[in-house]
Length: 64
Image 1 (cartoon, rainbow, N blue to C red):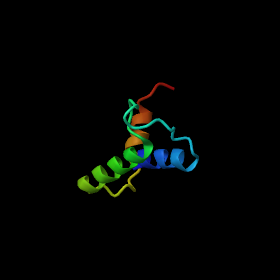
Image 2: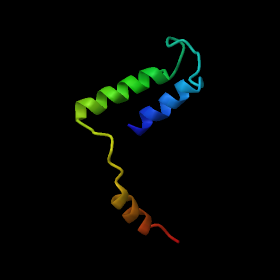
Image 3: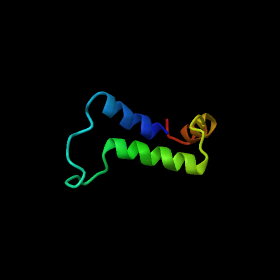
Image 4: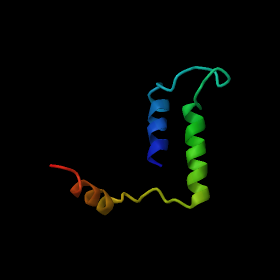
């Protein structure tokens, strides 16, 4: 869900690019938001998990 909000910010700030879809090598930001949202819903993701404990454990393995 975080990726969708990134592309939504691009759209909101009019930084989404204006290349027609048939000329583009990447999906448009609005298509990406729709695809991410659809996949999230299909997988039953709630989008509110931060995995803080796993992240902190990962950081503990990094050199200081």
